[in-house]
Image (cartoon, rainbow, N blue to C red; front, side, top):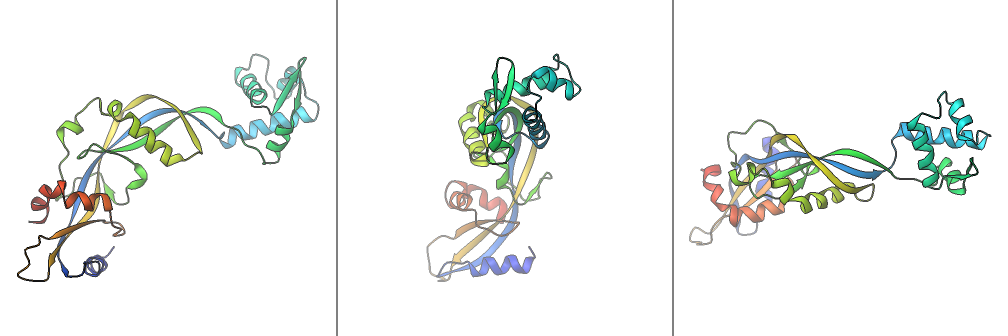
Length: 254
């Protein structure tokens, strides 16, 4: 946003009896970390095409695994296709009786796009560690970010930043963040490891100070924190800067 637009938002959002006094754009530190997740999810487009081909071939008469695999230019030793055929049987899309395969009612629905299946897979999951508070956040939370530390910024807490066991200590929070990110589209079975690489990221926010209009007022200023990308109010950080994070204000504003 342009400086004029930022100033307009800050001035117009003052509470009654208060006026906008000053502001600063600052960096807030996060560590972008990654886990390997074992999940159940919809098959990708390539796998979906393979399932459709297998089901269509069974429908037109290639009802034995040997003839099906031969038509596909493969053999009985093809572990990949054998595994996918067994999965379709296990998922209820194919039925196997005396070595003969047949497409079930669910298989017909799947071919028509009226039924979906979930398959096991592994995926990389990225999340954010707030290196000041130790909280876990979704990477979707960041709107304005930089990998270069801004001139004005809050320093990470060494106890949090250097803690090698932080991902284990925050396991439940990471799971909750995963579920929030994917809703029911991807089902988390388990986290099976951490990736060693991480990125240091600074989210850019605008800290604004508002002072009482009455010169004789003894009420202290209040503060707001907004995203530098669109000036949306960050309620959680705003609350913290008016309480426990007030110790960072002098180094940022003065």
